[in-house]
Image (cartoon, rainbow, N blue to C red; front, side):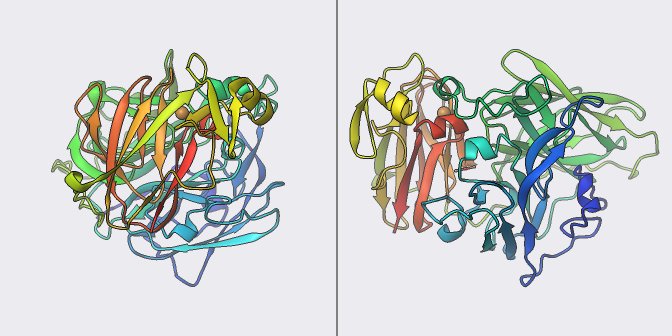
Length: 469
Ligand code: C2O
Ligand code: CU
């Protein structure tokens, strides 16, 4: 039993949101939550630096924490308060295709002031999130994203359950989002839109208050457009219990650092083993820096319980098909080319062949899957429902990619540089020149995107789709 639940989204209760609180509040099938993306401001920088103009769901960054119990219906009305069309994609949820929120593939986007009703019952417990799937590279960079927690019917015993949402912003000297560089070819062709300001839960830093002896479940989300982050809780030993929502055999990550590519999540158990009155740093490790984003602050009150919780936390499995029939699997190759320092002589785009220089100039595309830049009329592949599928991803580029699959979780079955990992994920990080074969049971009918979640790569051509019938 969760004895005390607090969330880090301070402004939420002030907004009168009935989604979370100290007692579990069930979402009623009949009442839809209005989640309106709209322009607002946020204090991303330390005061007295100015507030930043952002776009946020209900005007908040991160957007409101949505919460539902596994198998129960979640009803959300998207009321578009933006000056451009938008959708909501429920990242990682094995959802009905019509609710997947992909503009022009599964739905028409909601135009300004229009409403779109999302209704679905998440089949899997775990940590998920939501974000737009139209002009994602711009809308997410402006602050549109939020966490979706699907509770286990019997959650494991912890003292606190704390969402930690990390983001990377590109701000100018005036403290405002650099909007002129949206869609910049340089970002597309390199590592994506790297920012210069990191935030935790939409703030320059955030503290988690604990009592010595507490056991905390952290829900980590990397909501950055493009930045890969290593997360570290100095002096503490995290145990990973789920990745991308799906339970894993608990393990201690290398060097106590949890590595998250854009869009990836980790559920982590952290036991508060330091002394009352102390505090320890939360760090985000980027390629070159360690950025201090907050602290674990040990309150000076006495312990919450006489004896700390010590039993290993093992989450119950989700009802996902995990029996892979690899012998009879159908294999699809996905050859990734393009980007700076990569070979990319010719590519097709919307049925026409282009020399790269023209494709870049005319359409801003710099990447291709199997020689095709961007979404195609016909799917990459069509699968029969229930079939085991292998996708052999061959990264011929000089860049890492965070390959995301809609509607399904996938598992590595072969890796060119190491043993395949046993985890079921919705996003797989690939390093330059690596080859990874993933497999899954194509159980979910519909049209599903598969793209790089470094959003400028997606916009630059790394996007395709498959169909399950
Ligand atoms: Cu998180 Cu296709 O997206
Ligand atoms: Cu990429």
